[in-house]
Length: 109
Image (cartoon, rainbow, N blue to C red; front, side, top):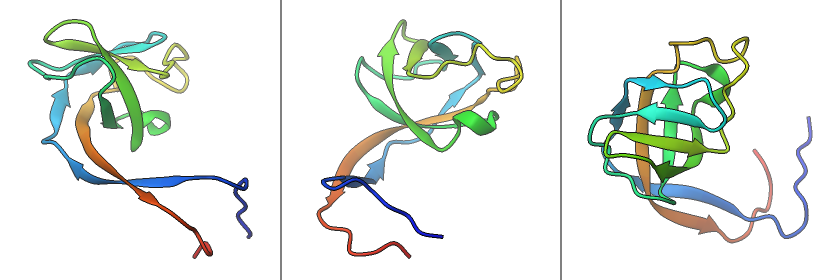
């Protein structure tokens, strides 16, 4: 199997993460709203989401703080209950601390 990336593609990996915050619930909405008591996130923070939903785990999202205990997960549409069963989206969120750019990819292995 061969992998190809468009010319000029940039790759980043996270160098640091903040402590994980528990998401006690994630709504079936567009965008999804997470409940996490005292999460501390502000608009534009990037988080690594680990959830019970296969299609929304191990993915980085931006957040939009709603209250001290809730935040929107920008770009995550969980309205389809076939992919996002109600009540099973609990998990954790970790704020991405820093990104490191990989300046040149010579091969995929």
